[in-house]
Amino acid sequence: MLLGVVVDDDRLTLEMDFCLQPGHPAYEAPGAGEEFCLHPGTIRFASIAALDLERASHAEPARRRHAIQSFAIDGTRFAMRCDWGTINLQARSIRVATE
Image (tube, rainbow, N blue to C red; front, side, top):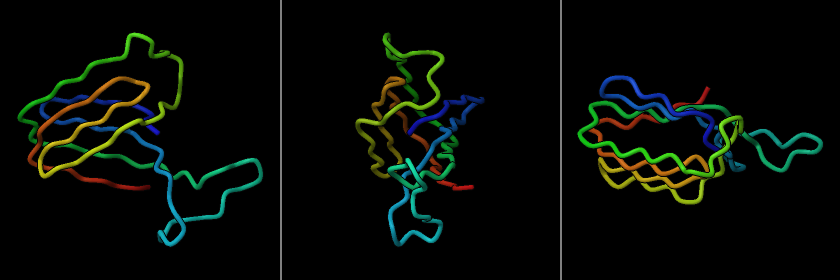
């Protein structure tokens, strides 16, 4: 789930809730009323060579979580389509971090 998009100079940070699977070191069984083990984290892109952000016209500004429909990293290229909109970029550095 996408929580936020932060653009700063030649960097982009995606604030995320990652859905962890059993076997991941930080996995915890979902609590009562929960379906998944969600864990906060970020995807940080640095030294961006190309960036295309397109906010969906139907995106709800007050919505906290945006479901992801497609997500791909291929070398230095990244593409994602979600309820928030679409993100396409090329960056020299891609780093995933969980809290």
